[in-house]
Structure formats: C-alpha cells, structure tokens
Image 1 (cartoon, rainbow, N blue to C red):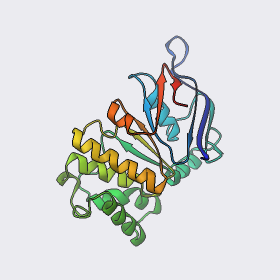
Image 2: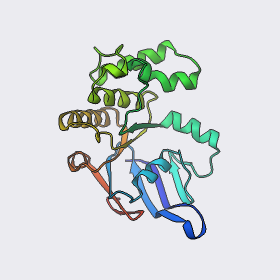
Image 3: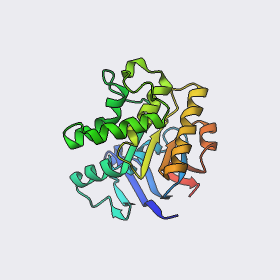
Length: 227
C-alpha cells in the first residue's frame, strides 16, 4: 500500500520557559492508503494533539509532517485550509450538527460554504451519502429529530462529502449505546473496504479498537506500538 501520511520526530510544546509542556516527543508514524487504524493511549498521552496536527488544524513545534507527498509544515495557512477541505474529513465525539438544519443540509454544509452556494451536484452527493448510511427516510428531518446514532451517521456522511482520502475520528462512538456504536463501526468498516478511505480512530473502547486492522498506541507523546 502507498504511504498516505508520514510524520517523523514530531514535537509539540505548549507554553514557554518553566511553564512549557511537551505533549508530543519525537513521535513518528505512517498511515497507508486504505488503513483502518485505532489510535490508543491513556488520557493525556497526546492522541488529540496528534489528530489535530494530522488534520492540519495545528502546526507542530518541530518535526516533519507529509500527506500525499506534500510538506504540511511548510504550507501557508491558506494552502492548509484548501488542502484540508479537499483531502481530510472529521468525525467528532459530539457530532456538531447544526440543530435547525436538516440531515441533508448538514451534510452538504461544508461544500456549500467553500463553494459559496448550494449546488445541485452537492445535493445529489449528499442524498447519495445519506442513503449509503441508511438514512434515506430521514434526509429532510432536522438534526433535533434524529437519535444519537442517526446524528453520528449524518456526521460520517458529512465527513465523506468531499471524498477525502483520510478521515480522522475522535471518540466517534463515545456518546453512543453499544448497539449504536457497533452500527457506526460497521458503517466505517464498510466505507473503508468499499471506498478505500483511510480512517484513524481515536478511542478508549476495546471493542472498537479490535474492529480495526491496526492498533497504534501512544504513550507519553510517542508511538509505543503499532507502526
């Protein structure tokens, strides 16, 4: 498999002088195209910081970060924003749906914002994704009318809207009951298998981690195993 993301000797320090806290310590790892990987580690190990850097939402203090062969550490903020919108999707523990928007409107919102308007092509893509995640009968329901599991499926559809190569998921099943969590994970595995989308899933759930083909464990800001 081809390398999709590679980070080498990644360091992230918050603060300066005596109050400085080093969260990532010379961390190195590789994600390949089509990976389905769980990101594991205790609270405070640096998982969320790593996801934020991989998502180009934060720059490392030092080290190398490349995706699709491009150097993320040297790119301008504008270039990072464009790259992120085209190539990276996000799924969070709290789905962050707009409550007064319908499921379809939430899914196409990122594309509508970047394009400056809602297009027919975007609506078609959004409808297809909602059908794919089993919500064809909820397309025009507002977010407030959906269950927790349904909201998270909408969030996954939204993350896939721009056909990203990489989806970063931070505790995507953390607020769901076991049945809903398993349904969401089944959906992620299906998308990974059929569309070859790479997923990196931060989780404390052993069953979710076991459903992934790789387990990458971070301890004290370094990858301890799985790479």
